[in-house]
Length: 484
Image (cartoon, rainbow, N blue to C red; front, side, top):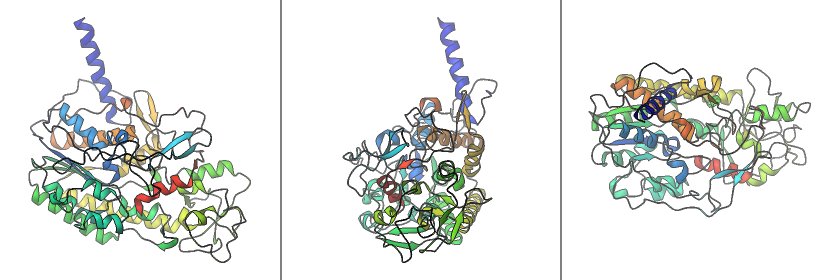
């Protein structure tokens, strides 16, 4: 009996090691599980929606419990950390309300399509808003690098940013007006901080196709200027180091948008569905009139249709109606969008080569600033950019199963095409743990990805890379509301 129990324990330990990399090969020896010479009594995470556990266009309890910081916290405890309960600003199922007043979470309604939209449910309510201290997870969906220090009242941000999450996370302003101030007021002082901001400084530009559509107006947009980002990021790290001189700080950089299914799903689906119909007509950056761009989606650097385009490809004037945008002179909404140059794909649904270059330039500059700050302050750095590119190219193999960056079928990204599923968050957690172990001599065990949820549906009927999903206009609106 004892022999059988020991054998089971050894096998489980070896399986856990498989989650370290994109390989099925198990290393030799048994894993340690300790903090080395480190003591961790408090872990605080700072970031945006990726940190918060946001999934499928919403915050909801069943997603937040698998936030990568919460998974890290669980593994820290297994290694001997005395952090107690890792407190998060949980929004009860089915999640926060969208602008429609109904729960914002989008779901896989049917395999036919697949059909992806909100169920029209009444929203949930915050579950632990009475916590008498700041949360340990200070990830705020929609937060940018400037928001780290911003002391604007959360009620004001509810109006100016139309973002309920600042008030949800920083709900007790007596504990600090900004993310930074609340982090300083957590007791005991953090021994470990994860800091991952900067994604939204470019996503605000990218998800809207290089513009912002607000109040029926199409507004030119741009990523946060590189010099501004560099200044704000270094100021943030300097402030953390000055206020937490003995604290271990781990940061992460920004992935390439071409490793994220929000930007890579619709092109191959359109090519598969509309063979013999393409080329498609589209508006180049800054154009509001008839199509001045033409694409077969097979050229070396084709424009990228965003996931939002899936709600409108093959339709006519619905995009203008749903966004209350006046139809520009010369546009003929009696024509099928994209098929005729008089009804081109709107600039808001597509990233042309110039917009892609602007995004790539911004990400490269941001990652240079992040690497510079990490090096100068001797921080641990997780290279998410390289990790995501590797997953996009090779998939992620674990325990005989391969996960990919494909929309819906890949298992790693939720239904908004940007935020991870529980399994995707598990991979993120393990990459952070891998760097912590290497940098600080810890032996934190890895989370078991096979025990985390993906998208709960049998999707083998679809061929990866050719899905043209049927997102409803409301689903698109719920996704984009995060970046208003």
